Length: 388
Image 1 (cartoon, rainbow, N blue to C red):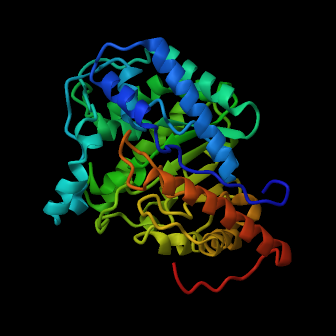
Image 2 (cartoon, rainbow, N blue to C red; image 1 turned 60 degrees about the vertical axis):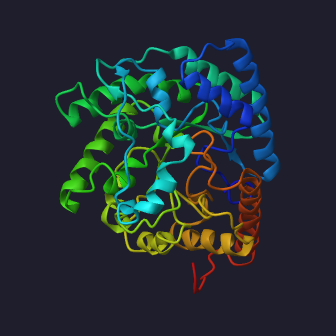
């Protein structure tokens, strides 16, 4: 809490202006571009994005990931070793619904996304890109709010960009963790909170590892967390958070691994903050899992209290109710109200209409205020929850 308020944040990506989407698409296609004009466009867009977040009442803001084609595949331009193509990972829950799968996977933002494979040695090569990203974000913030910057985890890179060079998955993760250290450290040194995007720690259970037993899947998750912890070993835990989800798409999700079966592994990650989906219809009930386990005293929960795949704008009273569930478990000083996932995971793919995405963020801030008022009258209210 800050000044008797519950802080608010989100997961990173926000709706990109059409001009930015076009620029990213053309850049991904390798078209010749005016670098200075592109940077001027991003400077304006990031400035407007930060202004809107602050106006909406969000306390811990990002640059909206406006300069990236997606939260994971952007690394192909910053690391060596990637070329050709690899298949976009297909969710196993969509296999039972092939007609609907064609709708989800046939979206232009996915079909045009460049997902090369690892075909050679990996090293971090483009430090200018991260320097520019951090510089334009700092200039947009102007000290008006706290800032966080997202970066792909080794595990999520391995999920989207297939390994065809290293002898094993473990070797691939190890080299990725070494290579990405440069980016992680740059974010920290710039004074921002580092958010490590780790949807692979849940989502890969019905994608990359759909055929594994739970025991086998947990082993792969432990390897992913080990690689992550190695990559951020020199960054203080309180300056980091991870984001975990089951995929930011409106689908059946009836093959999702349950939170109770992986939560202990998630808690073994070094970052202090844990951002996770907790509002969508498949996982909203899992708030109760956090009641049933031991949560280390140094962990901060960042539950999603608004859904990032529906155009319903949640009522502030419901948002407050969801926040207070977690407050009752770990206390108000260890809860930050967040979102299930981003609002533009892939450039140009807005499952939630942009205008509604901003309305949902405003509702998030309003719900946090309702929760604050409830806490002032009853510091540890015992909320009886009848619905999700």
